[in-house]
Amino acid sequence: MLTSVCFFLCESYFEVVAHGFNMVLDLTDIYGSSAEFSAADPTDPLIIIHLKDFQNSDNNGDITDGTGFDDVSTITSENINSKAAQSFAGQLKLIRQNQPSSNTDETNGIYITNDPNASKNFVLRNGVRQISYPFNVAVYAPDPTSFIDIDNVL
Image (cartoon, rainbow, N blue to C red; front, side, top):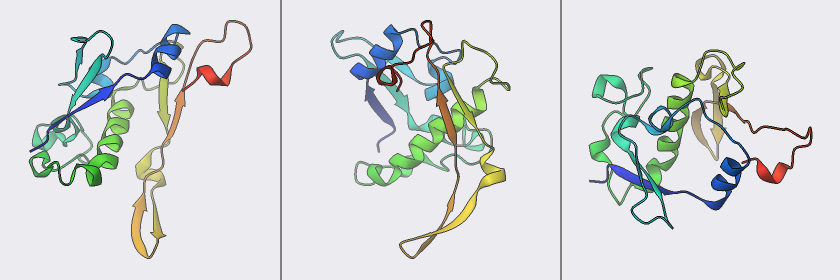
């Protein structure tokens, strides 16, 4: 049973932080209440997430709108790749759920708009009927010079 995933902090993340990227949301707001940071190897720090946090709150997870994983105990090393998109969607849902209600706080470095319940659509992809849940994600960085180098924004 696979219930934790490690993300390696990439160089571009540190470049954005070095340029003043700021977050009003903390580690657990973004990755779930069980998220951990580990710098056991300072040259390779990790953020460890627990997939149970992406379960809906009725199943002891952090997703309060009822759309998270039903049961992460069914996720294995054999099927984790087919669940990766669901895990990422869970992270987006946590951010939306935990972000401020207004996008006017300049210390908030990420903001997700558009209510997926109001804008979901039926789509046909390669003959398979699916429902799309669009999210608009904005990542913010300070612009003290009135010039933004797009390479410094994730």
